[in-house]
Image (tube, chains in turn red, yellow):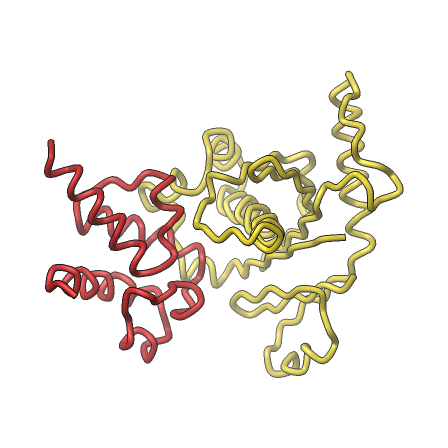
Length: 89
Length: 185
């Protein structure tokens, strides 16, 4: 795994920390981690995660991209796409 | 009959979410739904009513089509009736339509969604062609009420007392905050 990716997982971990009680599972966070199934995050808080990610990475996440953001890996893929698009402009 | 249920403990929701956070409503609700919220006497209640409608319908859809996504915008809600203690509505999700029946109180909101098959209810629900729109809506409300009668919903408050609930073989369950909702067909 690239250090950039590991760094992104760490940033996500900090964001997600506010919305999970399951700190043991949070310590094991990896690209396969499912926000709802593994971290017991309330589905309404997925909105907060998406909004926090937008702020943290200064990107805009459209509804279609948001649909995929159920896992850490999928969220990182979305962040990478949006960052790449931003840097092209 | 296919059902999905969703319960929101309003006290818990207040702790977990700030629906007034900038961007929050836009991520979940379409323009008409946002209008319903902003014009409601109790906007917070409307937020969670529409949320439980989407969640309960999503639970049916995701099970049937093996579709897992965080896609609140793929589900759109229409309210057919709304009073201080109940509401009926329609939710559409990618060409599938669901009837919803909700109960409202100061402490909680509970919604049951039913799949609109048009076959498993003797009242028949295919007849949406009625020219008089008011009549069609009345019919939808009656259908939702009729379907809701066939479902027994038990809402338990004390988690300790409800630990053995799985032995009672509920068709589906929903848990939030202080409440556990069990539905039996």
